[in-house]
Amino acid sequence: MLRSSNFRPPELKSARELGLMREAGKLVARALKICRDMAKPGVRTLDIDQAVEKFYAQHGATPLFKGYPGKVPFPAVTCLSLNEQVVHGIPGPRVLKEGDLLKVDTACKFNGWCADRAITLPIGTVSAEKLRLLRVGLETLQLAIDLLPKRKWWSEVASVMQKHVESNGFRVVTSYVGHGIGRVMHENPQVPNYVDRETRKQDFKLEPGLTLAVEPMVNMGRAEVDTLNDYWTVVTRDRLASVHVEHTLALTAEGVMIITADEPEPVPPPEPAGVNA
Picture 1 (cartoon, rainbow, N blue to C red):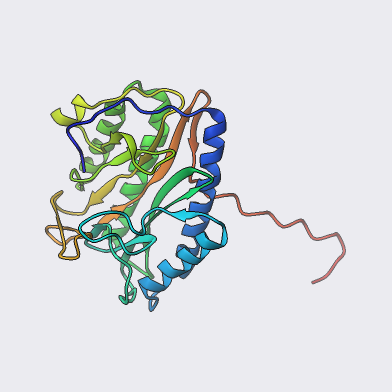
Picture 2: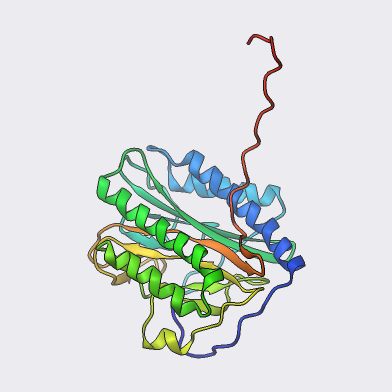
C-alpha cells in the first residue's frame, strides 16, 4: 500500500550483489515451478504451500512471507489467491476447480539476499475473458521490463502500464504497489503500477543498480478492493476476477536482469546416429 511519508532514495546494488540476488531468484523460480506442476483441479492450496515450504527448507532458504507481521502474522510461505482474491490469500483446505485463476506469490532470502515473484495460473480450462485478463497482466509486466532501460523516471513506465490495462477495458489496483528489494524484502522505493499526483511526489530515477519488485495487479472490473476478516486476503469489491504477476528486476548498464527468471530447461543430447529406441 502506498505510503506518503518516509521517502528515501533507493539503495543501488553492485554487480556482485546482483549475482547474489540472482541465486535467491533461481530458488523462487524453482519454487514456482513446483506450484505450476501441482496446480490442477482437485489439489488443495495447503498442499501446494507445504511443498514450497519443504523446498525452501531443503535448500537453506528463508521464506519471507511466513510470520510476516500484521494483526495476525501471515501463516504460510506462499500467498495463494483464487479468482476475485487479488493478493495475500491464505493457503488452506480449499480445493482448486476447473476454471479457477490461481495467483501464486512467494519470496525467499538466500545468503542474505531476497527475491520475490508472483504468477497467475489458469486451472484447467478457463473462460476466454479470464485468459484475456491474464494476457493483459503479462503484457503489462513485460512493458515494464522493456521500458526500464529506455525511460528516465519510473512514472514514465507506470503511465504506459496503466494505459495498457485501461485501454483493454480493465483496471489497475491502486491500493497496493510494488517495492524495492535487496537485503530485505521491502526496501525503498515504492513501485506503483499507475500515476497520480501522490505517486509523482515519490517518483524516482531509473539508474543502474536499481532493484525492483514490479507487480501489476489487474482487475476485470472496478479497481476497488476490500480485505476479508482473516486480516490478509484482499478481494475485488465487485467480486470479479483479478490477476497478479511479478518479477524482481535489476537495471544494469547492459539492460534489465530478471532476477527471478526461470532457468532454461536442459536440452537432452541428440541420439547417436543408427541407435534405435
